Image (cartoon, rainbow over all chains, first blue to last red; front, top):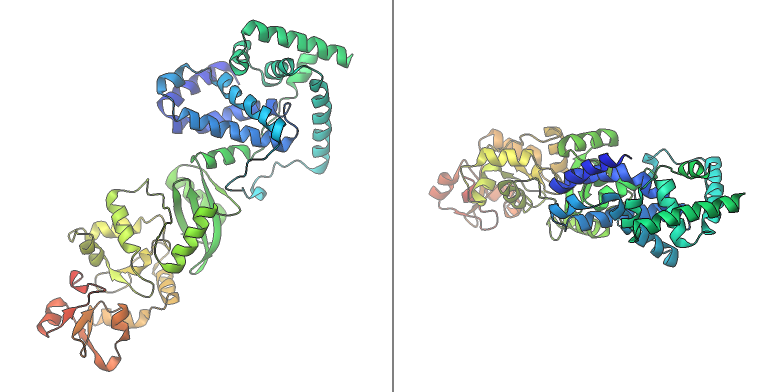
Amino acid sequence: MATDTVGLVNGRLANNLDGAFPDLVRNLQHGVYSGVLRMVPSAADAEDVTQETFIRAYRALSEYEPARIRELNLRGWIWTIALNLCRNAARTRSRRPRTVELVRDAFDTAPGPDALAIEEADLDYWSQMLAKLPPAQRRAVVLRHVVGLTYDEIAVATRRPPGTVKADVHRGIKKLKEVLA
Amino acid sequence: MIEETLAGLATTAPETVEPQVLLATGHADGYVTQRGPTGNMFVAFNPRGISFVDLGDDAAAFEAYFVELFDRPVFRVTRLPARLAGALERALATNRLGNLSIDWSGMSEFQQTVLRKTAQILPGEVRPYSWIAKEIGNPGAVRAVGTALARNPVPVVVPCHRVVRNDGHLGNYFHGTKVKRAILEAEGLDVAALESLATRGIKLTGSDTTNIFCNPTCRDARRTTPKHTVEFRDEAQARAAGYRPCKHCRPEVAA
């Protein structure tokens, strides 16, 4: 999504957290999921991490002063939470027990077995390719090119200087090209 | 180009992510269906507690109605959170709210007070609107009590069907008087007998062995055999006959 739309959400979050939070989830969930999917062992882990990212984001935001929310680099900040959870997911693979479980019949977008198989194969292939990169480069490449974050946002997310992030992306892409050649 | 291939890896989150997040953060409610007093019952909840109860079988209609009323999404879940499930079961079995959490957030202080008082009426018994008004120390607020009960978001759980018109007739219910009658009968109330009293203008009954008068559906009144039952039109008539009010159902406040 476009950065200026995020900026708009930022102001709305500061003024009315509960009113704006559902839109934040709606707007950022696909980017977070797309990136997380390339950093955790399975699609189920990616779903869990994505959910937990937004739940933790909400808890943190409800403690923040409006001024602090207004100044947040929102996507970068959300990704600091997501990256932490990705590290934990890889380490423990423990799934967070949910208090409620949705009746899934109500959601009809579940892919058929063929689509699922293709998706899994694709996931495995790209996970293997990306796994050949050092973690910092992999994170930077995924956040820049799969998720579409700016270098500044990635710098916030990874707590590294923008210059270093830029270098990581370039080195990562170069290495992927060699691997795929 | 590798960059374009990577951009093509962007996908959409599973449809369940958004509902799960909204449920966990209190921006949407979950609901289950379970057996109610006259068939199927929908029970909605959020982190604050039970938020809405409705009778019926049409889940789509229930969801649409919920969104209209509360302006937030509602999603069907497999079961209630454990802490609510246990408390709801106990509340329905014991007819006490006990430690059951109710989402009072959309209700005025007055409506909460009315509903908490209503929750104390035992199954098989009914009380008039005026009784609630006087019990909560606001005897002039009979109409407001009626409004508060008509807007009870958690019927059955808070048994607003046990509150009847001041003349003893059943009065309105959100699913119609028919449903109100069916629920009361299922609870063991003799509705025909109650209506017969109402038609004859009888608001109180007493026992000539104890000289105590009661609301006609009070547990103690129902123990009195027909031979010893005395009927009164109002409190003054009962007092004049030398009767005192029952300490359990406190009918003097209803007269």
